[in-house]
Amino acid sequence: MKLLVNCKDDFEAQLIEGLLTSAGIPVHKEYRGSGQILKIYAGLGRDIDIYVPGDRLEEAKLLLESRGDWEDE
Image 1 (tube, helix red, strand yellow):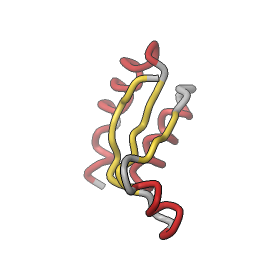
Image 2 (tube, rainbow, N blue to C red):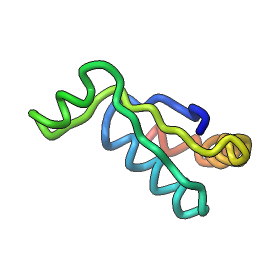
Image 3 (cartoon, rainbow, N blue to C red):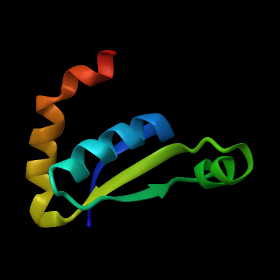
Image 4 (cartoon, rainbow, N blue to C red):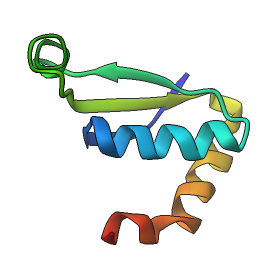
């Protein structure tokens, strides 16, 4: 698995995860530092890395770039 992007919170990570999985790209989320602790105790994760298979990395990047306008919403 290769790192695709780091998300600031669960909401952003869920948007990206949904986009990728709808395109058939497997996703693995991993919380950095205290991000997992916040998820466990406060219900909202922070600082989340999104990983995809190495052979699908370029496809995932292109998909995110083509949908880049969602970040402005």
